[in-house]
Amino acid sequence: MTQIQPIALVSGATRGIGRAIAQGLASKGVKVLLGARNLEAGQKVAAQISTPATQVEAVELDTTSQATIDNLVTFIREKYGRLDILVNNAGISLDFYPDTPVREKLSRTLETNVVGTAALTEAMIPLLEKSGHARIVNVSSVLASFTSRAQPDWIYKDVAMPTYQASKAALNSLTLSYAKLLMEKNIKVNAICPGLTATDATNHYGDRKPDQAAQVAIQYALLDDAGPTGTFCDENGRVGW
Ligand SMILES: NC(=O)c1ccc[n+]([C@@H]2O[C@H](COP(=O)([O-])OP(=O)(O)OC[C@H]3O[C@@H](n4cnc5c(N)ncnc54)[C@H](OP(=O)(O)O)[C@@H]3O)[C@@H](O)[C@H]2O)c1
Image 1: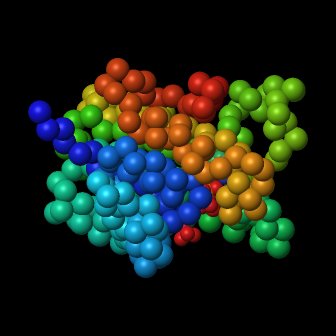
Image 2: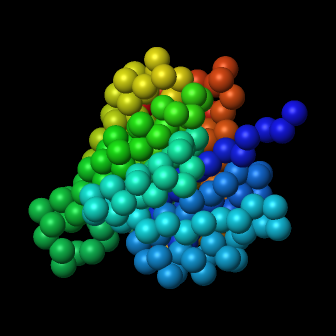
């Protein structure tokens, strides 16, 4: 029996963890639509990570632009008719820009990490419904875990990134709400933390590589029907909200 090739959209996949998620999914035979703000940059990455069996396809996507989201919905509907996996990876962090006023930092961070994610998710729901067993993975951070932040001996107890942590806490809330709203449609919605990873966002701090960080997102993107929904996990298992 021939199996239908799953179709995934990964936002913010030109570099870092998003690129590694796209590459990892493609290596598992998933048709990946690689979301890129700059389509030309996305096409270069898509060519680099395509496999002989699976062509990765770059698509224009800026989550702060409703026009690119709407155009992408039309494109996926006309070309593929459905979407099986949505990885909401696009994210920014501006806490370490001391000259940027907090109002601007917070609104830009929320616009990308929260408003953009919600807008993309809502727009893709009709295509995800067509899948019959769709998965949404929200790339969050343990830095937003209130449970962890309340522990006096937590490894990141000294970290304070007000705008980033607020945005990922809001993303976690979206995860729980959409998990509830979409449960009847067998669309599973989970938040994951990729772990502290050497990318542009962290000034390449530490040894953890994006391909390692991508594993938990890939695992939740490929959950079978018995898998959970409405959870927050990292590579070690459940994370407290
Ligand atoms: N790195 C870590 O330690 C870590 C830990 C926990 C969670 N995370 C989360 O993991 C995700 C990826 O982080 P990363 O470290 O890989 O970051 P990164 O290297 O800075 O890459 C961010 C990606 O998001 C894209 N992007 C930014 N704003 C966008 C928008 N408005 N619309 C669409 N794409 C947009 C960027 O596109 P351009 O190339 O066009 O700029 C880039 O592809 C983020 O959600 C981050 O919060 C990271």
